[in-house]
Image (cartoon, rainbow, N blue to C red):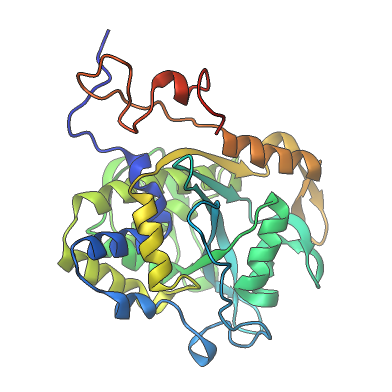
Length: 355
């Protein structure tokens, strides 16, 4: 039987959480380890008052997240802004909505992607598509709305515009990636600025091409397959960030994305998350709502309705308790110990404590 031990193998789930955080926690944790401070650049990502694109909202001021003792689950809302679809207030709808959930006790991270046309209650504004919450009340309302849907207390957010994503990919030198099929879409609404034209096959994607890939949804499964593509692409980004690991590159990455990113994570928050992330692994990812709990409806246009809200809350908790990864055993270990410090039996739930 082929050994599962592979020396020097890069594990995408080891660093995926950093890529979805737009390299924030990873950069700070590594820099702090080497005694190098880049707090000034990172603090520029936390914009307050007039500097914030969300300053028009009554509660736009950056809220102090609850004090973290290092044992509570941390949930981070990751928002990708569709800069073309701005409302009269100049705020773009969320084109991508993801939640990174980290458990510092079990050392497991989970990633959820929310279908943007999910029809939900938006506190204070009635029902609507979940991707409009940010246009109605900024990231604070978006955190509350998404948190209510999943039954999670979301403490942090990272908001990035299209150009920020492109800048990130270009800053790390692009991504080698397998495009699973031809992807074509003509977008006349923007003077063809966001056309999609990718060919099937393994290739090197720059920032513009990477954005085309993660945005494509013009096939039979539409947004369902798009959210899966986004999760898979993030894993590839994580690997590339790991392979281009040097301080000059990190500084360039931060500087390139700074104009397009906004977060309530302070440099100290990022430092602690970076330190936490070094010991975690990606335990699973899931679409919200899952196929068996959604129904299509027509309410001012096509929307997705959750069939059973209570069952969805249970599904999220069930997902958080699972570990979809198979840990690799430590080379030479006779007791089944894994690279994460546990045993196969413990990871599979046959012994030890419940996650």
